Image (cartoon, rainbow, N blue to C red; front, side):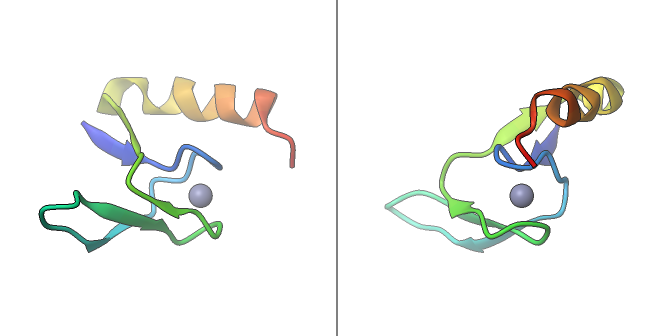
Length: 58
Ligand SMILES: [Zn+2]
């Protein structure tokens, strides 16, 4: 599974914190920071990112 930004669809996700409160991730391609992250299978990543582009607001 590959971690994907729920906001922009980027795979450039960095794990920045974690512990009892849960993991926190940061996206390199937008300013998203949060515990919620999407995970997609490697063979579905291309299709997923295509969907993000189609439905994206930017
Ligand atoms: Zn992002």
